[in-house]
Length: 164
Image (cartoon, rainbow, N blue to C red):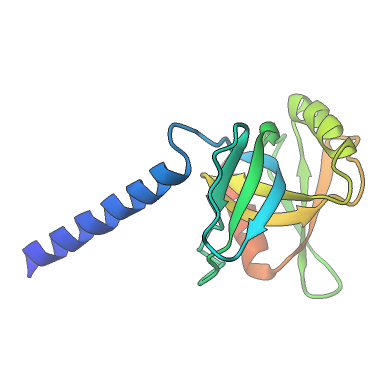
C-alpha cells in the first residue's frame, strides 16, 4: 500500500513538472502585472511566439476552471511594493485592495497602463494567474486599487502580496 502511494505521488509530480515544462520551457515568469493577450477555455491553445507565455489560472480559488491565459512577458510591471496591501470593503460585498508600488514599479506602471487602458491585465504570482482586471485609466502615482475581486480571490491575493 505504501509503495503504491509513493508511485502515485511520483506520477503526479512528474505529470505536474511535464505540464509546466511544456508550457514554459526555460522561462521564469516574475511576479507582477502582465497584459492579457488571449483567454482560452478550450485547453487546446499553445503559444510558441517569443515574448508570450501560456499560464493557467491558480486553482486555489478557481476550482475546476481550466482556462488558460496568454500573457505578454516582454513588458510587465514587477510586483514591488512599499509596505503591505490594505483591504477595504466595497458597498457590493466585494473587496478592494489598495497597493503602494515602489518607485521603480511606479514608473513602469505609468508607462504600462498608459498604453493599456480598457485592456485586461493579469496579476501573476508564483507562475500562475491569480486574478485578471481591466485597466480603467492610466495609473500615474504609486497607489493603485485592485477592485472587483470576489472574496476568495481578493483574500488570496492579499495574503500572497503580503508575503512579497
